[in-house]
Length: 425
Ligand SMILES: *Cc1c(COP(=O)(O)O)cnc(C)c1O
Image (tube, rainbow, N blue to C red; front, side, top):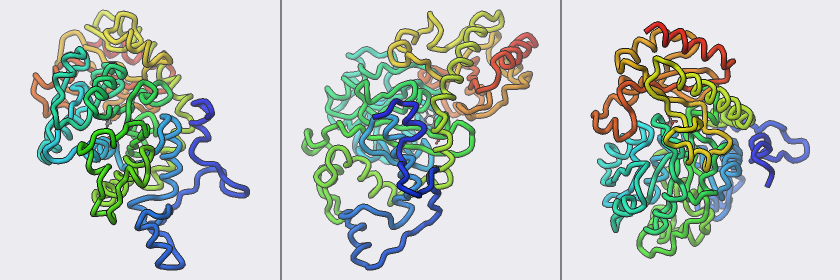
């Protein structure tokens, strides 16, 4: 397989003689067939093809195939958002009465999805510290645990996950490790190479990279053997009465079972499809992902070093800084750099942080992260405001924390903006 840069540019779509060089946007809800029998075969999943865009669309499939190549998986599906991707990735294997172990340092939206909304659906979660020992991690598993979940680089805490340690624990307990790889992107880390079984993304972030389209993706490594644990993953290993009695692992093998089930059941019933227009925009972003990530990391490193030396800064989290709590893990899992997200504490706490935010001119206040334009957020008063102080600290978010998303501008302009705002408080 080609190198990662070439996969970013050319993966997933190989036009034949005379076909469009850029992936075509198939802006059609439906597809036409000559006979009912032809269409029937598609509905029975006996032949592959398109019939309705809620289930599959060629544009989306090209882009999913590219991301699948980038992560080194065997199958992938696009979703309408990162939230949908994480929901499907867990709900595809955990039902009411089941249990999931998740790292506590995760995106606030994912935390809420797990701890509140999926709990209402009858799925229980146990949250573990990103710095837990193998023994503490083992202790979180129950007989009905169906998955372990974590983020490569936690948003916004910026903890780096010990993917190998988490993968070993998951496999000891006979469940897959699901890793949300949004911040690292497959350019900087490919969790499957470290033992993860399923990878998710909010493609809204670096993959799109321009703040243009909300989206998500799920990639399956094809390596988790669902059939090894009889009775544990019945949705994959026993007939699906809602889909003509198909057994996904039998019909599609380990390489295709998980994504086919997620498409045939979850996308069919919940319908969180990405629009082909958005998939096209996502692909434009992917074509330059490797170039942009390098610059995001360069600028992020420069900003982190500047902040670490500033008298009005209490602390900085960036795993590229020697002495950072996650420096060693970063060197191991993210040798090319982490991302452009840097978090730090303004001296003077919550009030000073709010005053600092008001003075910024180049950095804009946004809940968004990870696009070309630099932006910043004070999570305790925005995205994480539903959380109690205890939950905030467990997620690694202190009241003085400011999250910067360092963009692709000239780094000196960014540093000057931060400097004048810090000096003004
Ligand atoms: C933003 C984000 C999500 C949610 O993605 P949406 O596309 O906004 O639904 C999930 N995980 C991480 C790590 C994120 O940063």
